[in-house]
Image (cartoon, rainbow, N blue to C red; front, side, top):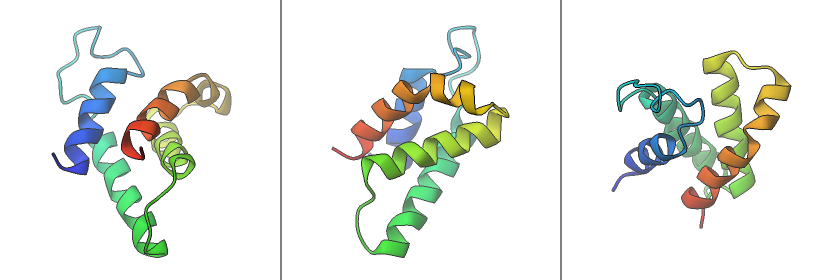
Length: 91
């Protein structure tokens, strides 16, 4: 499974915005998954090392804020979901 596939799977599982449970198509978070995968790869390329959980969590939060136009408070409310995704990507 590629990193992008895993991120897509995790975003569908977490369904952070509840869009899938409201009937949105399975590819609802595909754009966000692509952005996250790209940014994680870029971060690893800059350091020539694996990214940390905290780094992944920050990337997911940043992408979420950009894509959904959420306030800092709304981002804080989603921190647990971001942390769960990061924990699966960086064991």
